[in-house]
Image 1 (cartoon, rainbow, N blue to C red):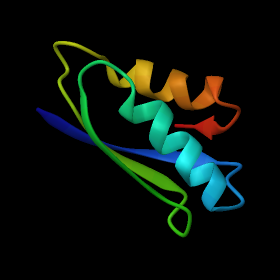
Image 2 (image 1 turned 90 degrees about the vertical axis):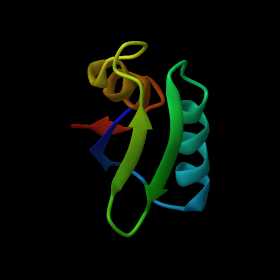
Image 3 (image 1 turned 90 degrees about the horizontal axis):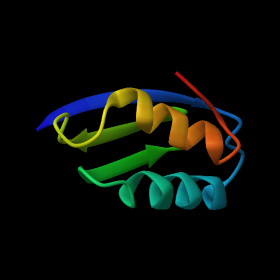
Image 4 (image 1 turned 135 degrees about the horizontal axis):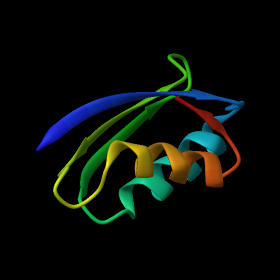
Length: 68
């Protein structure tokens, strides 16, 4: 397992947090996703053999947010 922090732009409320959490948690290989509105970031634990970090970033961007 690996952990990464993804910086997220464009979140304005807890609804955004819930949306991003759901998007990340639904990806194969993701075991946990914690999103913080205050820190504008997501901490994600994932299996790099199943999903790449770039796919995590792309999923957040596809949900309508900026991610890096």
